[in-house]
Length: 192
Image (cartoon, rainbow, N blue to C red):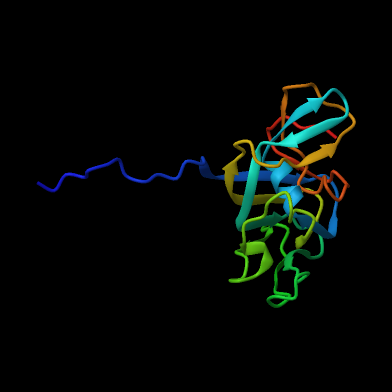
């Protein structure tokens, strides 16, 4: 009684969430972040020596951004996230915080607006869309919470790099697809 006659359905793709941390090596002024930027910052593997890396994921979705922007010894410091409306859907929503005290960083927590491009799954076919822009001071910490689907033979996202070993895992700068390599991963293996 009450037994299931067959095995239950499952989601066969491996889906998980992770928080990635980046540090701004210089000031960032309205740096556009694309789906490709997110996928490659989340992890990629060298596929052609010193030439190409490919993403480990088939899809990525932005869940949240958090920024701490240190103020200078005198003056103010600000950090901003602006969601872009390249697809004509949604509004150009901007979240910003400013600190005037050298004792406290500017700090913001931002989630993509509902039904905005940045809140939807991005795949290799849509990764060139600008999703949001970041502005922050040098030394800022940027946490990006992502939901990811591990690649299982789907189309792949590839990017040219200057240095890569075949089979080596890399985590690219958040702004690598721009490319400026200013927002670099903290405590993860990276390349340019």
